[in-house]
Length: 249
Image (cartoon, rainbow, N blue to C red; front, side, top):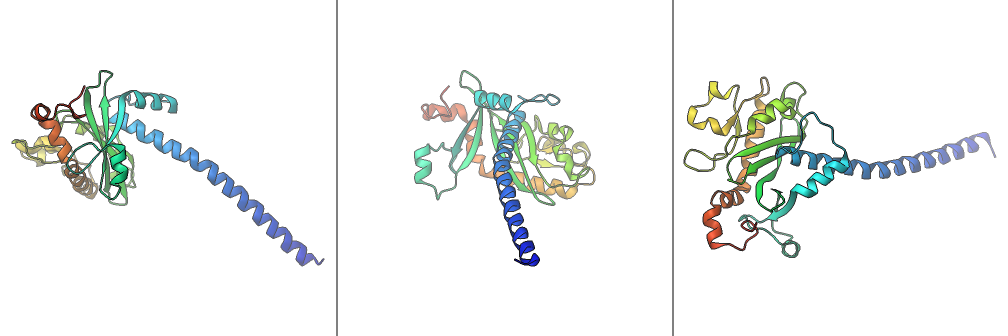
């Protein structure tokens, strides 16, 4: 056998071995990556309702335990009604929306968490917005994935920006849907007094990120408006629908 043939065989075997090792490594790491993504998402859901301390480190098992004890995922249809699993399978072609319920041990819904998936300046922005059980007051906002510019639009992941959402409203003075928007600069400097509850301070040098996030959040919250209305009118709603899961404790 010539030296050229030997070299060719060696190179081929080496390529096969390296490819096999890379494939095995990628397959093994994929499960770990998926687990880490899930833990990060759950951590952000817990954070949105104030169950995560800002400067404390949590293990994956702690996050899983806290999530299972406090959070329950449900799916709703476009009218805000809960979808049972069997029905969800039968109606796979219909759009369903996930909602995460923050419930204490006695079963009372303290808040509901809405996944935020919107376009940013350079890519998608993913996070969670939590609303109190009054259906209008924001209890928290988090971002767990984005592609915005560090130091500018990337400030959306910082505590100072996200904490501005707490206590703000998605309804106007008359109870109408108004969403939540990012102001250009300080709210008190650019927004009239009667609309300030629907705005948070903007990020200097990141006006476009604010515009994209405001538009995207309005679209998402509009889709969830039927369930928000149920929470706003819960006393009236539960008088006529006492056996629905929204009303049961």
